[in-house]
Picture 1: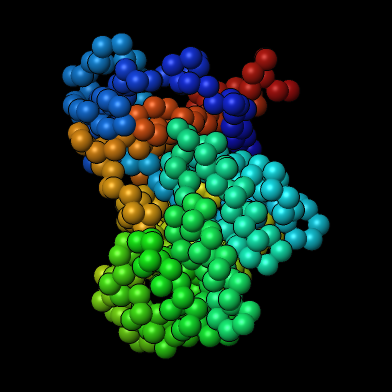
Picture 2: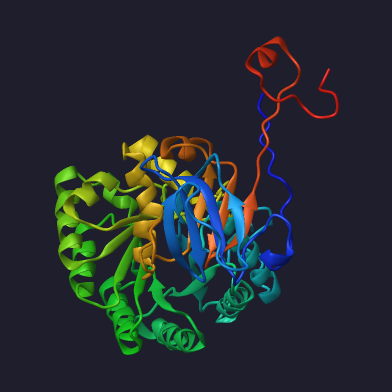
Length: 421
C-alpha cells in the first residue's frame, strides 16, 4: 500500500530568508520551471507582494539579492481562499460536550486551524464566530488575536454571528453585534433561520452593515424558497456585497423552484458559498446546492470547508482542493471550473482582488506536484504556498513501497534503510 507521509511542519515559521527550504524575502523570488494550467512551462519573478514578470522557462533572472526556487514538476496556480471557516469551534471534536470556550484555547484552535488551511494553500480565510450567549465577545476577541498572530502568513477576517436579533431577547444580541463590529469584526453575519422573525433579523443585519459599510455573510439552509427570495430582495444592491451559505436546502427543492431562486439571487447579486466537504454548526444539514444550476443562472458560487474537525464534521480537513475535487466528481464540474470556486470565486466572495499568474497580479500562489489540474485535484499531496511574494508553507509527501518484483520492474522508490523484508 502507498504511504503518503507529510514531513513534520517547521514551527514556528521563521523568516523565509533565514530558513532552509523557505527562500524569498524583500529582495524577491524567482519561481523556475513551473507548469501552468494551459501547458506552458514558465519562470515567474515576484517583487514585493506582486508578480513582476512571467517568461518562458530559463528566460528570467532573480532581481538583485533575490533567490530561486525550482518548481520543476509542479503546477502553479492562483492560491485558493477559504470563504467559510469556523475557527472558534475548529479542532474540538475530541472533547466531551461543547467546545472549550476558554479564550486562550479558542485562540490556539483558531490559529492552528488557520495554519492547517494555510498548509493546504489558503492564504486568505473568513472565520464565522458566534457572539452572545455564554461566550459574549470572548470568542471573537480570541479569533482577532489569532488574526494578529498570523500577520504575514495568512489573512484572517472574522464574521460576527449573533443568534437572535429580534424581540426582547434580540436586543442584547443587536447590542453585541454593534460592539463586535467596533471590536474588529470585518463582516456582519448570523443565521436568520434561527430567529423567530427571519425578516426582522435580516433587517437588523443589513442596518448594521450599512452603517459601517461592511459586507454581509449569512448562514441559511435555503429550504424555504419564499424566505430566500425575500432575503435576496432585501439584500440586493448592498455594497460591498452579500453572501449566503451553505444553501444545501436548494438541493431538496424541485428543479423549477430552485431555478427561480437562482434567477433571483443572480438578479440581486447575492453570492452563494457551498460546503462540499460537509456542514457546519450553524447549519447542520450537509447537502451541497445544485452548483451547475446556480452557475448557469449567473450566481457567483464559491466553495468553502465549513467545519474542521468539530462536532459538525469530526473528519473535516479544511482542504480547498478537496472541496474542488468533490464538486468535480459529484457535480460534474470541469476541473478548471471546480478549482475556480475555491480560488477566483472564493477571493471574490471575500472582496479580494483576482489572482492570475500574470505580471501585475498579487503574488498569492500555490504550487502542487503534478502536470495538470485534474491530477492535482486527485493527488495534490506536495504543496508550496506563496503569500505576499514569499514562501510561507511547504508540505512534502513521500510515496514508498517495499521491495518486490512489481516495484523493481517499474523503478519505484524503495523504503529507506535497506528496504522492508
